Length: 113
Length: 113
Image (cartoon, rainbow over the protein chains, first blue to last red):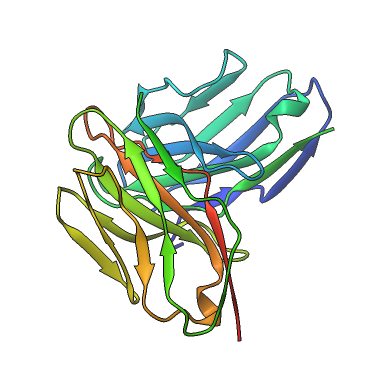
């Protein structure tokens, strides 16, 4: 596809369960970012990949959150032992390189019940 | 640390009215500044940007000038349209290590015919 694709678009899970959120960046983009947007707030940075490696994971809130990008393209954000406070829209963005415009996906709305 | 503060919404205007959405920032060094827009049901899109002091970003009739002396990047449009109704986010990137974005909380604009 032409843009950043995130799946699923919506995810409802029970407290304590494990979830995986997927991001397909624009083809050829080496930089990939994850953000979290809570209701009524702006997006908050979680983690940044340059190629396969996590260059900056300073925004991950705790060790229940983990992300991978094993082949330098698709990325998966993994959340263990979900809590109700994890409910938010998780956004992915990619750019050709770190200093060029980032394009955002439409996000995955995660609801923990 | 770096932060962005923008005026709370909603901002409600009649079509063809003048728009200002205030944004101020706190940052060390010389950040790049951005306005992103989120139309209903769509992902975040870059509206305009400025990378150094006194630069003016412009797009679709919107403008914002990077003012280092007042640490501001106010968004303006001379004549709004109903189709401009959206949520607008001011953001900065410190460009030190990565281009991760720090966002404000967003301002909802509602334009009525």
